[in-house]
Image 1 (cartoon, helix red, strand yellow):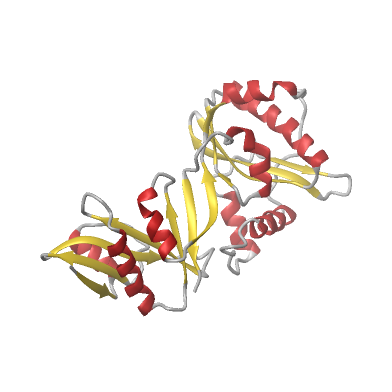
Image 2: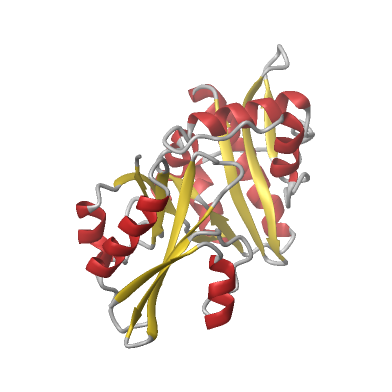
Amino acid sequence: MQLFIHDDMKAVLQKYKLNKIETVSKTGVICEEDGLTIAYLYYTTNRFHPYSLHLHCNFMIEKPDEEILSEMLNKLIARLPNSNYILKLESNDYVYGEFINSNNFIEIRKTYEPEISIDYLVNYYRYIECDYDSQSSPFIITDKLVHKAQEIYKCTHEANPLGDISLHEWRMVITDDTDLEHSIVIYNENKDIIAYLFVFDNSESVKEIGWVYFKSEEAKKQLLIQLKNTLLRLKKLGIKIIEFEIDNTDTYSYELFYPFIIHSFPSLITYMKYK
């Protein structure tokens, strides 16, 4: 077995036709045995979370080898010693358990991605009385909303912090694929934002619920009333499924939608190795 470090990993992967990711890092490690590539490890960067390197690995053998992976990681760290490393694994990737423990990775987040029928959601929230014809505040991407959404995002991503992103750029992030007609924002009498819920377009019969915030229990109650109303409207439009992305580090979405994941396994677990 031989390990080779490369400074043009994208070219290497293209040569071996191993990967088509366009954001591949410059540096990576290839493991060869008897002249054949059996594994590789590289990293990508995330401009919104620039303080860590995101690891990606793949094995071309039947079973991943934790010892090989550790050796590849050590070789990469020797080249990039002053970095934090992020590793995201599907929850059933238990084969990497020893690798996680022996290399001092720490779990920082669990992510749940339930897909729930809108009929189930409407029935679940049947205890909430709402006026189907009532008009809520229009969902307008104001500077105040952009600032609040960035503030809350920072609070829920402390382990892998948000970088120095301008409000203009953040506005572009939060408006991408946002369903402005069905997203929710609630103001108090002083015009302060006390709750919001972003709905995103997915497909003709699917919507996704993303970022959520509520200031208090009363704001949470108001948000649930408007959510019930929104679900009824979406059902009338022919939406069948609502997808969620719920992080256990996100106080608001985790609390609001906990009943839907209480008996579920996370779809993704994120680990960090600090420098």
